[in-house]
Structures are given as structure tokens and as C-alpha cells.
Length: 119
Image (cartoon, rainbow, N blue to C red; front, side, top):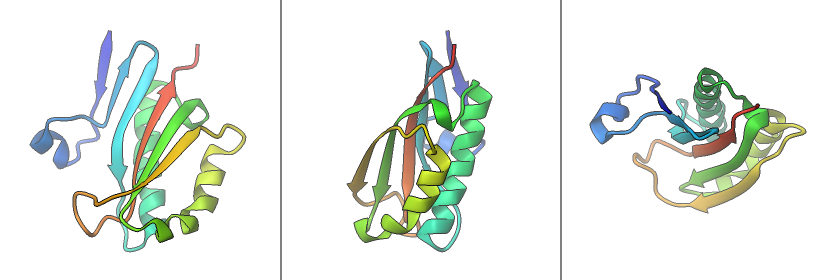
């Protein structure tokens, strides 16, 4: 069974995707950008949206096994480290950081996660 989770974001219907898909015991959360003026504000905001999707799927940050961070400027990643450390705590996932352009220059970070549903 596949479950699709929508956040109601404006880009979902425009681009033909949903916030998360639950399939085969896995939760795949789409790349998520946040709101705010700084990378730190956007990081916190994106994690809030991701947490909502994980919760709806029956998971949490402790179930995340893979995270990908995408930033247009790799120098802006370090200010996010304390937030990410606090979020994942004693259950850090495998991680990758990619420097790349995002869909709009106002976005400073995009975060994508994969979680395994607890049994």
C-alpha cells in the first residue's frame, strides 16, 4: 500500500509531487524549503514542515536514516549545524550536503529525508 501525504504547498500541484510518500515501510519526504530571511530561519522552518509529514506518516526524526542538504552556498551550512544536531540528537542519519542552485534564489537551504517506519 502506498500513502501520499500533502502539505498543501503551492508547488505540489504545479510540479506534480507530494510532500511525502509512505511505501514498503519507508517514508520518503520530498526536498523541503523553509520560510524566513536567513538560512537558519529557513532550516528551522523546513524541519517543522518535515516533522509534520513524518508525524502524519507515523515516524519521527529518530527514524530518519538518510538526509540530504542542498544549499546554493556551502558556506551557509555551518550555521545550521547546531539545529541539525539538536534535531537528530542521539539518532543521526547518514547525510550528504550538495552545493547547487535551488528553485528560487530566496531559498538558502532545501532538506530531503528518508525514514524507516518503526515496527
